[in-house]
Amino acid sequence: MLRQRALSAAVLVPPLVVVLLLGEPWIALLVALLVAGAAFETFRLLRATGSSVLTGLGVVLAIGLAAAFAVDALPAAVPEAVAPVLLALAVVLAAVGAMNRPDPRDGFGTWIATTFGALYAALLGFVAALGAAGPAPAAGAPLAPLGAGRGWILALVLVVWTFDTAAYVVGSRIGGPRFLQHISPSKTWAGFVGGLVGSTIVGAVLVAALGHGWPAGAGLGAFVGLAAQAGDLAESMLKRAAGVKDSGTLIPGHGGLLDRVDSFLFAAPVATLYVLAVFR
Image (cartoon, rainbow, N blue to C red; front, side):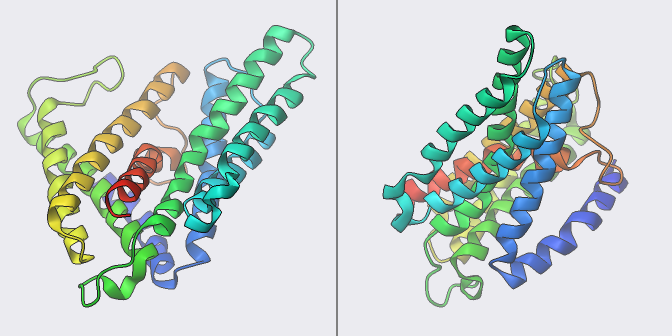
């Protein structure tokens, strides 16, 4: 398992490091590509559950919604309410696209599944939103050279990865009682606690390195860790419903793209909300 995770990291880490070094617009481009890939795999899983979907339209809607989430995080854009407008448009377009189904019951299911799949994958757009919403690092802080966008995104990535890694290591070493076995049989309470402790510590360290104080950073790490766990379980529930082990075969040793970004789908919006509430 550790070897498989190392192979996955070898695929994902280099492009992520390059993009963080380059900054915008490359971060936005990478997020858009990840949203498109996650949306495509989501619709494939939804089809496997027996749901009818409009994959092409759904992928386009997911990218548009993700962009709107990122834009709305900019203070100047908030009054424009871009995200709610595009969300309403996504519902309308999915409904119109489903109207060509001969059976209205099939059309209704297509409408609901397409809207859900687009919104679910679009949550990844909050990675870019976090970069837009986060305050600038304090002058002289260790991570100040990264600026606000890259600094907060790096913090999110490292906190989520810490939760995932710590949960796996502690859970596999200690074992013990399991939770939500009907969704993910391998999850243990020990692993959950270990992951949460790890994410809290790393959150405190990284936010302090941004010059904003470790207590608020510990809160960020804890909330992001909880959201990351929920995101992982949500995708597991979708895969269980679809009757598959992995969302795809894109990444060596770790299934599809969605299997690697599932935690971020929930963690990114939670992190963005926390930063807006605490640091603004």
